[in-house]
Image 1 (cartoon, rainbow, N blue to C red):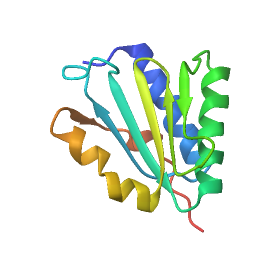
Image 2: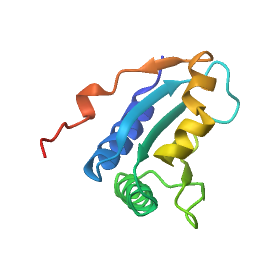
Image 3: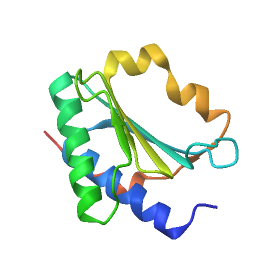
Image 4: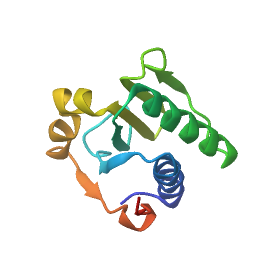
Length: 125
């Protein structure tokens, strides 16, 4: 079972991604099989610019909530940005890169999907 602090971190990250129109958000509880993180949050966007905007919004809102990013990678290209918050790792992909690597398919067998639907705001455009 994921602790309350982790769920708050996840909620902040999901809502921040949603505010910048991240798509297809998936959260996986992998704490029993992973030594580097407890929860993996995966999302995507159609363009490099949007990937970078989503990653920046997540970092800003996490910092405002008191959660510091330990390390980040990929912000130079905007195709796959990884944000390491310790127990939470966030992956923001450009859509075709996400499909190519299939990260959630690799990890979904190792963990359990976390229901984040209450934090995702569906907008009509």
